[in-house]
Image (cartoon, rainbow, N blue to C red; front, side, top):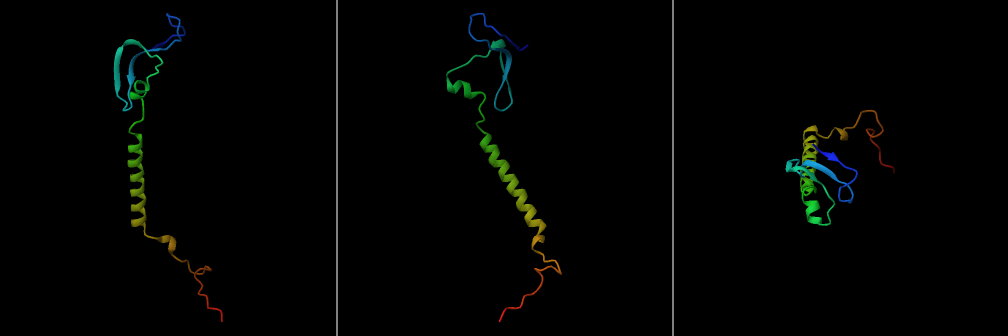
Length: 98
């Protein structure tokens, strides 16, 4: 069971003790029971298991899907915004000034 301690037996700042970690894909990573999470100075180790490395790809795919949906709505909806309503000032034919 995961627990947190306020004081570490060796006198350093306390850290959480965990039974598993979760990676960037949401998969469970098993670690030895009551493993301790500690602060690290090594950038590769600290970023490796938690970074959003493929989020930009998912963002581009999502943007493409939204653009495709908007294109399909535009194609199948036609252009009703360009219709002129009878009796409005836009529908009145203007005669050129002499």
